[in-house]
Image (cartoon, helix red, strand yellow):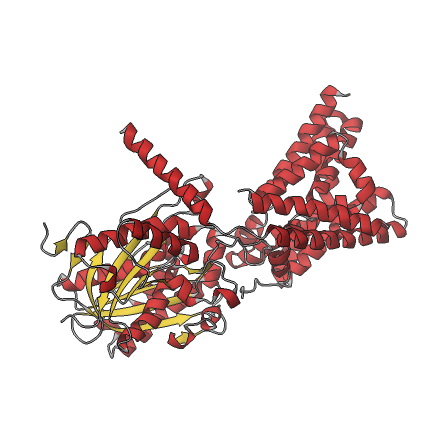
Length: 339
Length: 118
Length: 153
C-alpha cells in the first residue's frame, strides 16, 4: 500500500498543510442571509460591473483569489498552483480568471463538490512535496447557472418545493506548507454513486447516496467516530438530502445527529428567503467554508471539521436523454491543533 | 355576462394545467404541447366549438384555443384549396400570433435586459 | 453479472420509493386557486380586447387574428418589464397556459441570450422553449387537414 494511504479511499498527511488565509465574495441574496457577517465582500449588483453573468462570476473568482493572497501577506507569484473549477461549460468562469491571474492552473470539474476536490488535490500536492503554497478556489452564480442548466431568468415558471437555489458566491483558500492556520490532515476521495434519481429538481436526494458512501468510507478508513468532529458538513444536500443522509448513515452504524449540518441550509434562511430546499452550487460550500467555518475555527469555536462537498455530475444532455444523476462527494478533515 | 363565462372557462382550463404540472412528472413544456394538440383534436371532433361559443376568450386565450385556431384554419383551407390547404391552413390562421411573437420578442430583447432574481 | 445488475436495479427502485415518501408535496389547493384566478383574469382581459375590436366593426376574421396579437404583445411587454416571472411564480399554470405565457416563453430567452448577439443569441434561441408548441400544434393541424381531405372530402 502506498505510504500515506489508510483504508480504501483515504490519505493521511505526514506534513498537514495549513489554510493560512481565505476570502469570500457573495451576491446580494447571500448577503441578506444568516451568515452575512462572515463574508468579506457582499455585492450589491450581481453583474459586478461586467457585461454578462459569466464574466461577473469570473471576476468574483479572480478577486477572491487576489484578496486571499493579500490577506496571507503574499504576492501572486508566491502561489505555485491554482486548483479551481465552476459549474459552467468548459469552466468559463475559472479559465478566464486563471488567464488573468497567470498562476499555473489545474482546472477541475466536480460540480458542487469542487471546493473539497480542490482542497484535496492542493493538500496532496503540498504534502507530497510538490509545492509550498497553492490556492484552492471555486465559484457559482445563480444567473449563469440558471441560463445554462435551467431557464431564462424572466420565464414565469414555478419552482417545486424540492428545488434548490444556486448560490452566487466565490470562496478561495490559500494552503501553505508553512505558517499558522487550521490544518488539513486527511482526505477521503469519493466514488461516483448513482441510485437512479432522474429529477433535476431533487438534487439533494440524488446526491445523498454519494455523501453517505464517502462519509462512511472516511469513518471506516480513519477509525474516527462522528463525535471525533465538532462539525460534519455536507455541501448542498438541502433539507431533504440531509434527512436522507442522516438516516442512511445511521443505517450503517454511525449516528451523525449531534454534529451534522449542511452548507445549503446554513447560507439561506428558508423561511424568509424563499429558497425552498436550500442553497446549492460550488459557491455554496466554498463561501460557507471559507467564510463561516474558517472564521469560527480561527476563533476556536470549532476545532475539528469534516467538509464533505457534494456534486451532481449530470449535464443538460444527459438529463434530456433520460439518464439518472450520478453524484460524488469528497471529504476533507480540517483540524485546529494536530497535537 | 360574457366576462364571467370567460373567467370560469379560462380558470378551469388553467386548473387542469396546474394539476398536470403538480401531480405528474410532466414539465410545463409537455403540458403546453399536450394542450395545443388537444385543442386541435377536440376541434376536429367538434367538442371544442361549443366550449368556445360558451366561454369566448376563456376558451380562445388559453393554449388549447391556439390549437382550435390552427385546426379551424386547416379545415377551412383544405375545403377551398385541397391538399395545399392542409399544409398552409393552420399556420395561416396562426400567422398573426407567430409574427407578433417574433417582432415583439425581438423588440423587447432590444429594449430590456433580464433582471436578477431576488 | 446478471445478478449484480438485478441487485443494483432493485436497490435503485428501493431508493426511489424511499425518496418519494420524503418529498414534500406541493400545495395543490393553493396552486389551483391561484391558477384559476390569474388564468381567469387574463381571459377576461382577452374578452375585453375581443369585444373592443368587435365594437370597431372589424370583420370577424380580423377580430380573431387581432386579439391574440394584442395578448401576445401584453405578455411580451410584461416579460420585458420583468414582472411576468413574478406573476408566474404565484400563478403557475394561470400564467403559463394563456397565450401570454406563450409570449413569455419567447421573450424571456430572447432577452436572456441577447448577450450572445442578435443572430445566434436572440435569433436562434428565441424559440428554444416555444418551439415544441409550434411543431406539434402546426404539425397536428396539417395532419388534421390531410385526414379531412382524404376521409371527408
